[in-house]
Image 1 (cartoon, helix red, strand yellow):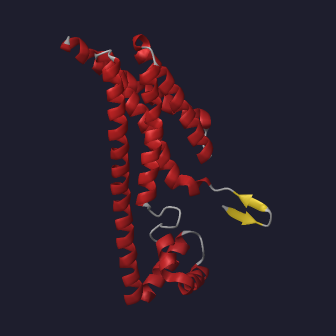
Image 2 (tube, one colour; image 1 turned 30 degrees about the vertical axis):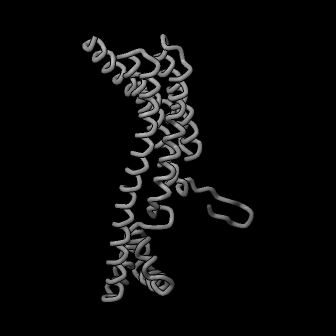
Image 3 (cartoon, one colour; image 1 turned 90 degrees about the horizontal axis):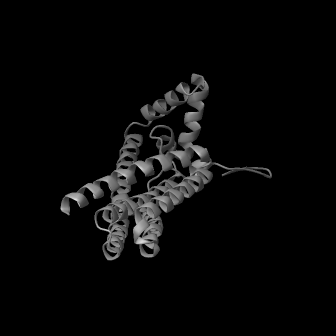
Length: 234
């Protein structure tokens, strides 16, 4: 968020890290748990089996999302750390070449050679590693990987998302379980899409339609598989 005098300028990109993990977790929590419940309900309409499947999906999915997010973001953090170490060594061993490399970057962005060289000198004096990390490697405080934050966001958001179809599995009528699960989950997904779009400053209608369509496809395929297996088992 940039502030000029009394005007505060919002930048939605600053929310990218936690927003991506949270939306992915909640969306997956709703969709995967509902799909499991619909598949089980289509194959074996017994409440204890449906509730158990929902609970198992919630627990396994939450832990899987958290672990997967932590591992993947940790890999990103390791790569960033290795790049910074290599860049730090190059700045120590060949500072002149690195300075020209930085100047060339600014020339390609539209500065004339003389001004680009002056900018490179000033930024190198201020913080050479930060300048190269930002302008050569594309790293900054917004995009820097934070494995623990991403894992916790995924764990919490998946759990919150999965709780919704889990509660429906407990209270919904068995006779209409598949339809109620689908209806409530599409509603939940659309609300999530709208909230995520609002938080990220993107088009709400587009986000709602996209998540509604793909949610329907995923749950429809799962219901079909559950029905087919249920018929063959009986």
